[in-house]
Image (cartoon, rainbow, N blue to C red):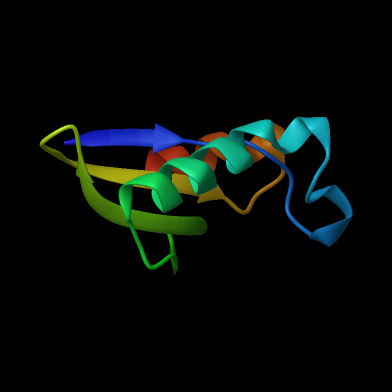
Length: 75
């Protein structure tokens, strides 16, 4: 099992901000590999599927970046 976490800040205000590059990366990975749908879990958004032949989770915490450890710890 793999867990890939894309850090960022929640809300539309930060959607394309440089601090959200991590979130943009996991969204791109999900789209490219057909993972999803995204659902609310672990204080964030989670997509599940297979990455490189191994089960994986993509997590985009919906906490502020400096508090993302709470979401990651839950996962």
